Length: 337
Picture 1 (tube, rainbow, N blue to C red):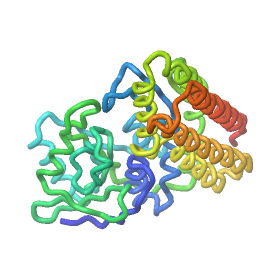
Picture 2: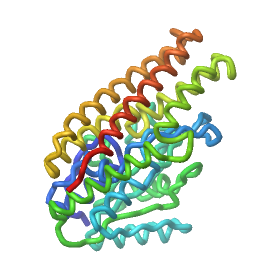
Picture 3: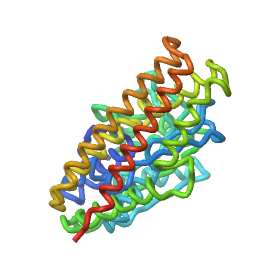
């Protein structure tokens, strides 16, 4: 059983899955940048009391699952979501979906994915892929971060769908219900909703560990890490920042580049020329996130490590916070018609 489905490689798993699932009903108009922006995917959060791979939880995007949910809601698309206690029930439902012609998104753990290079296998349970067919005992897989479609055996897929640990997927499966074609007017309204939601979340979150406040407060903390934790532990924290930024889920710079592309594509639907200028700002801030990652890598790899090096790392985050704040303030000033 193989569904008519076209694999498109993407920069990030959830926005890639979202766009690939919505391309069918949008006549290929919902690209990855549109899915990411409509889903208000840009974010920042640093939560030291939650540990992932023995390091603090750091994210440069919104929480897992929200890009798909928000994008579908803003576009008026109804969705099906299920989690399971029983592995047997999870597979039965999956086979039923595919047999009925539904390509489906699945949340999985990365560590046991056999087609991932070993150096990229972490205990990270918020990866997303699409199942679009069955051939004998194998499931046909479209993983958007991979260049080509692949397959997993029934046992391999079950293992990653029921990975243990933080964010355990519990067989999580989701897909948009079949409906009428998504119109340009729906996309235009969804773009406006996505931008407004992202502005509010980045500028006006009440928590000092999230949004623009979170970037600033993390920069302040970094300047104290060497004295508070010692060079080795401080270096491991910076390694965690870089791992979450550049190796798991696209990261700080990559997400800013996707958002810049979203604003460029949004311009075609709204004709607000300000979007093109603000897009350039997010490209600039994406570049600066990458510069900060190089600085952090120099510290945790032992090439540098003085207090001045930590101060410079903190200053990079101060500068990033200011640039992102100004970009979102500019988005907030746009008068939508």
